[in-house]
Image (cartoon, rainbow, N blue to C red; front, side):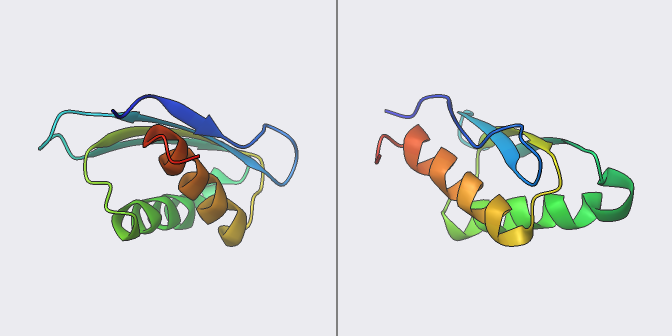
Length: 89
């Protein structure tokens, strides 16, 4: 059973990701806040969407609070949140 999950922290250079399953066909709802959103917001969103796609997540609500995380950290947090949502951790 899928359930709401999270990963990460709100510390500097990290990102806090919450993910919640949605009904099939709902798509991905993404909300990102970031201290560097003006410069990197599109890139952050793209990394999150790409990671979700790679993990086969098509229907989820994702909320991310970024504090300057690099791409590999963003991917790791999204992957961990998805694993927790699926009960794989």
